[in-house]
Length: 89
Image (cartoon, rainbow, N blue to C red; front, side, top):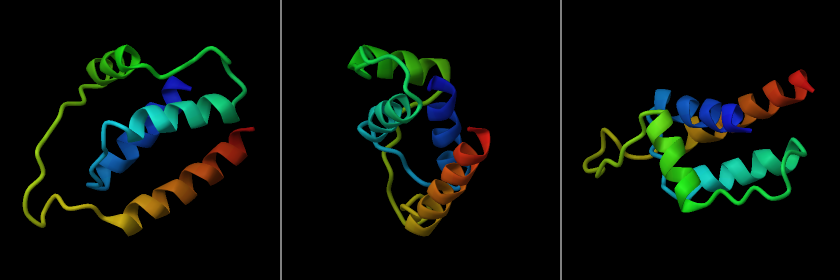
């Protein structure tokens, strides 16, 4: 589940899509549920901080158009990820 969450966040970063602090734990919980992993996993704030530290994720304040959200890139990545997950099962 941690690897899938990292794969997801890295894909969005590569496409220049900003990720909110809420998005990472939500995706981790989603992957945990879909992969049938630990029912006790909660994606706590401590888990999020450790995840961000492990993967070098830091907070940035986004200003201007250059870093604005690219919804289409995010949507296409989600489709790519779903196909990848289906192929791995």
